[in-house]
Length: 221
Image (cartoon, rainbow, N blue to C red; front, side, top):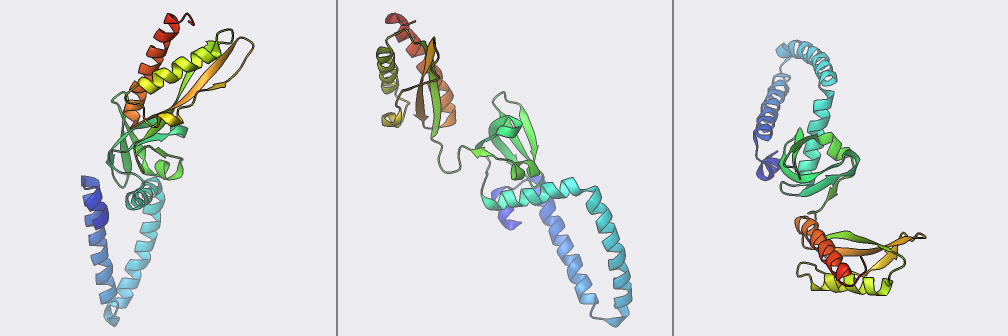
């Protein structure tokens, strides 16, 4: 708990840390008193009743307990941290982690809305973390064109626009290939590397606009 608090200090984690300390003290008192014969029968009765109470409470709060256990695993594993941009494909959730507690994770979406996600969901789902090792992002640029145009010319324009953009990194890995060929059209597909996810959205948009402008000047569109 001390390690968790050093990384993620908030009200929920402080409360659970204190509750754990109180629980430890109570268990210690029970163990100490159990050494004396005069207390054994009383303690056995209390432990029997406590076991029933714990079973009832555990059944009632099973979802909360599941979240706490999942939260403990997440906080101690360094899988996520505040500030990471993550995506949960199964729930169509994408955003930046604002808060991590033992019960839930708060994510700021692109719309500035907040998604409060139960920790068991993060623990059980496939989660894409864009910041786990570094923030470099690779995203596809897809340009649909008619198959009656000069494909080599279109490909040359796309590659030139990419090479001229100052925020595209790893330009030697940005090779343009043709995909999705039909009788009337095809798609020119290029993987664009940027320094982070925020830059990726902007750069892809700027590349599309510049490519359209160049295509119009060359009579391709």
